[in-house]
Length: 330
Image 1 (cartoon, helix red, strand yellow):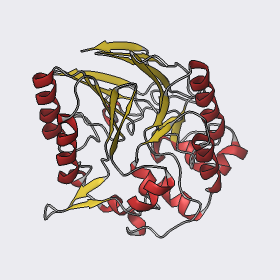
Image 2 (tube, helix red, strand yellow):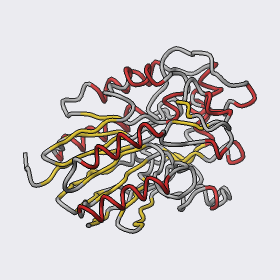
Image 3 (cartoon, helix red, strand yellow):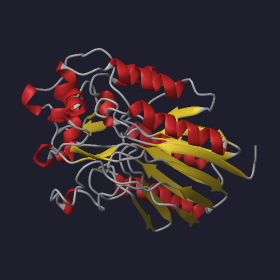
Image 4 (cartoon, helix red, strand yellow):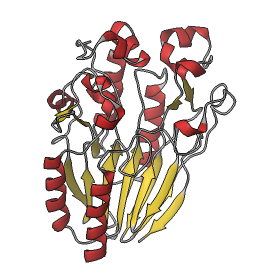
């Protein structure tokens, strides 16, 4: 083990309830992590649904098509088996809560199922500090914060979610006060000022900038959720959107045949995505004040988002079948 750096494998949004080949995608990731002898691996949410179908806490008309399908059909035990594949690896593993991880669970149930010490937490490897945040909160019209619970967030307006709750922000500020050196923050939703980002990103950004300015910390925030390949630096802080290992969700208006009728019929929601031919993930090497990323490039199964006329304004970056390789520094 090299104490001057830490190597980790990272992927997000496998969506085993949608994809017919989740097991193979995860196996490719695990194989790459073994070959690179990573110190740990982490997935950034939206992994699988529980095998049971708990009632959702929102009206039927508010339930998205992918969740409605899972409510009434599909092989949900497959997702649990694939997560066991992740959990049983000899490589230390960590997880982040995704919004869809809370469609059929409350937070306490999801935390237990995903082996989390809590909905947000921190850990250290080789002297480097990592922080996991939980953006799965909505704020009602009275300003009260609520955790996502059995899909209740589907009833919310766009300005009501997602948020980092005040208690978590207080915890984060105290956590940052104790850290000297490089900090990597993992979340499901973006912490930057883009589509689908946490609503209080300005407050968080100010907190991170104060830390970087005061103590000279190199800070990188990594998220999933948006299924895009995109990195941007704002002031001293780097924000990286990690592309999905599986697909980009396009929606019912852009449905297309993907794997052929037998498979598409078994996994009907895959028609509403642009799936990637190969699994997309990254191997990261973190040094003091430098992060090196090795990603993958693939192609789409079936027509691309561009070929289907998917509007560019739906995402904050082009829909591509790749995770870029790059190096950033403080």
